[in-house]
Every structure is written in C-alpha cells, then in structure tokens.
Length: 256
Image 1: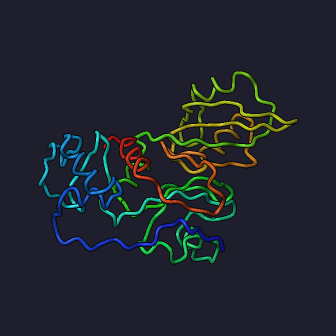
Image 2: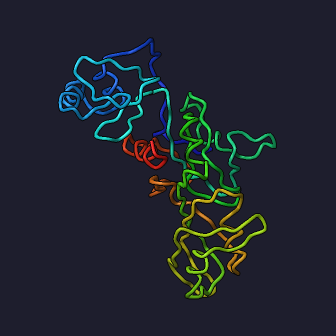
Image 3: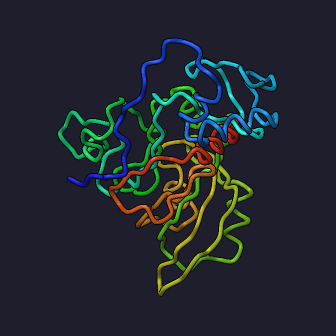
C-alpha cells in the first residue's frame, strides 16, 4: 500500500501552560527565537487581538496568534495534510467492508487521529484535506462559509458555447437549484472534452449530477483545489503536510 515519507510523524510536546511567545512562534516554524523576538519587537505579532510585547507569554493550546495579520496555528498537536485520493478508494478513514480507505495510505507515520474534510466518491479522485482540527474542518465544510472547490472533469462533448452561462445562471436538480462559480473548457478531443468547474456546493455527487443534467455526463472527475489549497503535482496516493502559509490561508478563507 502506498506510503509517503513526507507525512509527519508526531513528536508534539505536552504543554503545561503559557510559554514565552518567541518560543511558541519558533516551535510553530516561524523562524529562530531571535527572529521571532524581532517580529514581536516590530509589533507584527498579536495575541488574542492585542499587539504583543517582548516578555509576553502565550498558551499554544488556547491563544489566537496572528503574524502580519495572518492567523498562525501554534498548537503543534494539530495536523494538516493534503492528500491525492486515488480512484477506487472510499472517503472514510476505515471501511467496515474491508475496502481500501484513507488510513491505509497513512500507516503509522501520523500518530494523531485525523479526519477527512468533505468527501469524494469512490469513482472520483484528487484533493482531500485531513486534519484533527475540528473547528477548521467544520468551517471548511459548512456552506455558509462558501469555500470554493474546483474540479477537472472529462465529459461527453461537444460543449456548446453558452453552457458556462447556463451553469452560472443555475440548474434545477431534484434536491434544489445549483449554480457554478466559474466554468471553462480546458480541452476538447473528438467526442470528449475536459472542463473545469468551480462551485462551493457540498451536496453528494453534485458535480456529476449537475453536468449529467445538462447533457454532459462525467467519465472522470479530479478535485484540484479546496479554497486556497491546490493539488499541484502531488502524486496519486501520496500526502503532504500543509505549510504554515497554507494553513493561514485556510483560516483566512473561513474568515478567521
């Protein structure tokens, strides 16, 4: 079963209370303690909305810290992963029917128990986020936060010129209307086409049902982004740890 040497193995410390702010920042990967002291001195760090000062202490498990206006996740017990889910894998951490599931690709390299953010059906592939940050996961999945998701789809062609406008205006499905945020034709080849669809809906099989409804059933679907996080060149079945900047971008996407 595929494994990823880049997936993080937990060596997170056990916190006993507030620590020096520069130590907290350094542990979160911001930079050396001296560099973090300079950030604090230059008034670029806030703790719970207040500009920090040298000598301040912070609790990584409770305090909200921003650097240059961006939320920083300083609790090193929390894990944020991107995964390229292969086709044929179910979007559960473990499957009672014995099918290949997400945890099969993590092995023992992630000691914390993580959960998937949203779903992809077994026939679909591409980007999934895995985390043990329940608050962020809830916000990313909740429709009120409007986090967009982008999909690359192989569909039956040809594609009429007005299809994008039709999808943007809204299409009625059996469980209510749906409209896309953006749509474009990426490529055409004979009777098939590749299209890119972005929407912030989270209903089951929503992209497949939408395109089938307008006469272009999907033969392959790959999710390429969730909010600011992109699949990029991450190989199928592999995972990688999100960078501090990517985690900060996710917080920003949900208004934190």
